[in-house]
Each structure stands twice: as structure tokens, then as C-alpha cells.
Amino acid sequence: MAYIDRIRAIRNFDAAAYRPFRVGGRQVGLIHAEVAGLLEPYRSVLVPGAAGFDLAPGLTGPGDRSAAMADVLADMKGRGLIKGWRDEAYAVRERWGTPVLMEMERAAVPLFGVEGYGVHVNGFVRDGDEIRMWIGRRSLTKPTGPGKLDQVVAGGQPAGIGVTDNLIKECGEEAAIPEHLARRAHPVGAITYCTHRAEGLRRDVLFNFDLELPRDFTPTNTDGEVAEFMLWPMDKVMSVVRETDEFKFNCGVIVIDFLLRRGFIGPDDPDYLDLLQGMHRRREAPPEP
Amino acid sequence: MAYIDRIRAIRNFDAAAYRPFRVGGRQVGLIHAEVAGLLEPYRSVLVPGAAGFDLAPGLTGPGDRSAAMADVLADMKGRGLIKGWRDEAYAVRERWGTPVLMEMERAAVPLFGVEGYGVHVNGFVRDGDEIRMWIGRRSLTKPTGPGKLDQVVAGGQPAGIGVTDNLIKECGEEAAIPEHLARRAHPVGAITYCTHRAEGLRRDVLFNFDLELPRDFTPTNTDGEVAEFMLWPMDKVMSVVRETDEFKFNCGVIVIDFLLRRGFIGPDDPDYLDLLQGMHRRREAPPEP
Image (cartoon, rainbow over all chains, first blue to last red; front, side, top):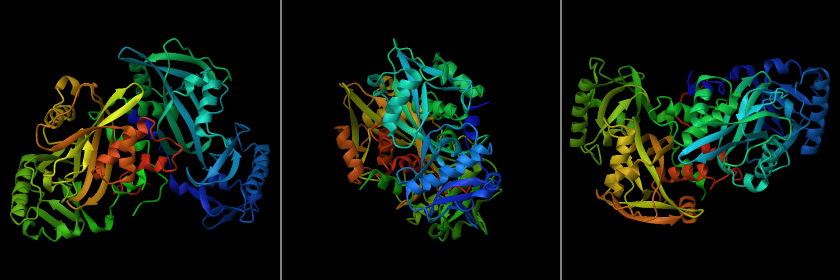
């Protein structure tokens, strides 16, 4: 196995199986044929057409749209069609940096192929020239990736809170990192991907941060989402990412981004450019002229 | 003006104007219609067909291919068709990490739309929490970008030398950085682009390195390629990249990559994802399934 296998796992997408989902005339998602078959009861809200689904055009504001969508999702939940309900609202946009068109329950986001946002923090300590990385093991009760390895802090980006504020909140909840330490985290980029998973289509944007932690700080979980934290030398982090799928599918890619930025993987790796390009390219993008 | 304008400058490509160029059956380049019109005298070596140009299939090894191509290029130079002759051999590959199919003169690489490789070094110093960056101004005698701003060290990647050895050589020639300092540079990624310029089609891969320099070190040019070096606070570097085109078209993008990795640009910038994706995506890539 090789690092590039982690990239392949975030690029498992067959465009032919999906139809666009639009809100206010803007494409916000991609609906799989199997999901489309479940939406017949909601055709007054999710209006099918030759070119995909439109949220009923009569719903013109974020409030009305969110309410109508919430009714649909509550019914789908009652039919057992939505697993791992989070009771957490995600903002629905055409793309990052554009206006929020509505909100919807996080667990339904992959079913509608809506872009999902998250924050991931690479927490590390320096020991002379050596770097060691804090790794979390996800609780067995997590709806996605139970028991898998993860960053020290990672969380979804709910509606109505800024990225930095969310980062600070997650640092506190997941690892008991106090605010004055969390504020040392700095943005280092983002990975973007579109891949089919058990929960649906993950069209994710994960904002990455690096956070150098003091050597005398030990993370402690406070919200039950992390089973244990481990401080690993980079050699071990690298071999586990490269040789196993112990890391949650997207968390391993976040580590690879760290390895690329900090010189642990260099141009002598024949996959160097495929690793760099593969964590940024969007397979669902229309071909460019 | 905005950072995203620098990205647009590396994405000026009209696929319809180009035809593939193959060596040994592998596509290695893209030839513009205007260049194609100049190649008629060389049709025994550069064989035109319905699907582009093939280097004569009878040339089966890198040595024979390079010699035949050198004859063509010498003749084109004599006709005044190749500007800025470097007398420097570039390796021609299908893509990074695959075998070298032949070598050719660097100045002709953009005419044939062959992938060009280079190394760029972000040289910076720390002063407490502040970072300042060494900026070079290119000599007025450079064939590309005369007088433009540049990294402290940047150079093409000639055939027959490894990336790290080339980096050390360029550090010595361009900025008199001694080998023990140059070896502190570490790879941080690469930018890849495909864009039309005066010299032809730049399909470049630039390997980027960060090098923290001691505060008491001052770079000195030894090869006549740099007119002056300046140590700028990041605020100034950022405003010059953002508001002007004083940086050479690709060097400004290398700076933006530095700004993204080190938190000077964050997710609150509405162009954040376009900046990240735009310096990695290849516009000439075939649409993916």
C-alpha cells in the first residue's frame, strides 16, 4: 500500500449515477439514482425534472426553504432512510464564499450530495528537531468511522458559527485544549473531494490547521467522541497512514497534506504530484474549456 | 486587484488551439497551430498526422531522439524561431515520475508545450513572531521576466541532476547560500499550471521549498541573474503580490502558496478554495469520468 491509496479513497465517484439538486436555481448538490427513487412522496418540495431536482421555486427565502426541507427530512427519518441523525444544522451553499441558500440536518447532507464543511487540526509537539503528532481514536459510538484514527481535533462546520470560533469550540470539547492554546492554530489550507461512501456522497471541504502544542500538555476528551489520544513519532504516523486504513478515510489525507507541507514526503516520491493534485481537484467539476 | 488575479494568469489556456505532441507513443506536449505551421520542413522527424505530431517512430532511444530533435531545433534557431537560447538540456517525460524519453533545449520547451520543471525557494527570516521574506529582482538580461520580482532562489531543473542537488547548486549560484544552509531547505509542495505566454505554452511543475535563513545572512548574487535582493516584511510582500504584477507571473503564485500554508490567508477569504485549487489543477487534463 502507498499514500496514493488514501487519495484514491477520496475519489470514488461515478458522475453518471447522479443528478443535480438545485436551490433557488443554483446547483448545491448531486442526488444518486437510488436516493432519487425515495423522493417521490416529496415531489411538491423536491420537484423532479429532466435535469435533476429543484427545491420548489415558490420557496424564496432561506427560512421557508429550511422549514420545507426539515419536514421532508423528518418524514424520511421516520421511514428509516436517514442514519446517524445529528440534530445539527449545516448551511447549504452553491460553493464556499457564496450566500447561504438554506440549512439542513447534517446527517442528510451526503444523501443530497451537498457540500459539507469541517475543520481539522494537526496537533503536534516538537522535541528538538523531532516532531511527534497527537492522534485521536474515534469513539465506537460515532456514526461515521467508529474506532478509526483521527486528528487530535476535528469537527463538522455547523451553520451560524465562523470557522475560527468553531475550531476553538471543537478544541475545547474534543481535547480540552484551552482557548489561549487553540488560538495558536493557524490555517494551512484545505482538502476538497467528492467520493461515494456508505452514508452517501461526501462532497467535502475540510479546512486544515496546524497547532504546535506544548510538550507538557496532554489532550483529554470531554464530549465522548474520542476513545483515546496517542502521541506518535512521525515515522509511526507515516507508516500507519501508508500501510493501513486505520485512519478514517479523510483524516489520513489530512496527515498526507501535513507530510507534504513539512518535507516528510518530497519530489523523489513518484506519486508526489498525484498526491498534491488529488487532494484539491474536484472530480465533479465540469470539464474546463 | 486580488490574489486570484495571479491564479488567472497561470490559467490562460485554450485547448482548441493545440494538438498533441507524442514521443514513443506517449503524449509529452501540446503544439500551437502557429508553431505547427512552422514545422513543415521537419516532417521526417516531427511527423504530422490527424491526431497531432509524432516524433519519428524509427527513433527508439533517448539518444537518437535527442540528436534528431537537436538538429531540428538548431535549424529553427537559425531561422530566428527560438528566442532566448539557453544551451541547457531539459528532460522530456510523459509526466513526473515516468521515464525520460529524450532531452531538448530548454528555450524550445514552451514551443512544444512540453512539461517544464523548476525549483523555487522561499527564503525567510524570523524576528520574534514576525517573518520577513527575501525577494530577488531579476536581472534585466534574463530572457523571461526581466526586472520582475522573484524568490530568493529559483531555477529551471535541467536534465541529469536531482531536484535537491539542483536546489543546492542554484542556492550557491543565485544567492551565495552555502551548502550547509541550503540543506536546511525542505520541500513544501509544488504548483502546476498550463498557461499561454509570449515564449509559448508554459506547462510547468515548480517544486517549492521553504528555507529559514539566519538573520545575519545576506544573499549575494554570483551568476548575474539577480539585480538586487530585498528583505521585506510580509505585509509588503502581500500587498505587492495582491495589488501589482511586479512579481514574475509564476513567482507570485509561489508566494501565495507560502501565504496559504502559513496562515497569512485564511478561510475567511472568499477566494480561499479557488486559490488552493487553482495552483494545482491542470486545465489541459482530460475530463475525468
